[in-house]
Length: 139
Image (cartoon, rainbow, N blue to C red):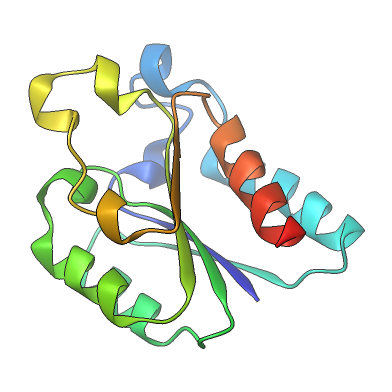
């Protein structure tokens, strides 16, 4: 199973800061990923929450063989608890960010999560989700 987990404010994709995040909605991204998963005979699930604890609970329920695409939103820059959760689970986690966090405000340039994730993809718009999914499928 591949889980696509989105953090705070990503439910507003398509309407929030479209110059940075684009016009695609989260539902449109999910449909694209479902098509890729279907063509590759993969199971995929989606979860989005604006609440840090709900995301941690969801990640802790993943099986060791599961794979996770995680867009933590702003939590990537601030959440020690989310970092500790990722470090504690066995599932492979790929961190994604739609924008290039290294070219943004100084407080966004560091991710607390990156050192405990299997990989990081950022700066390619919503294609980061497809890139992560294709990589995980190929593993």
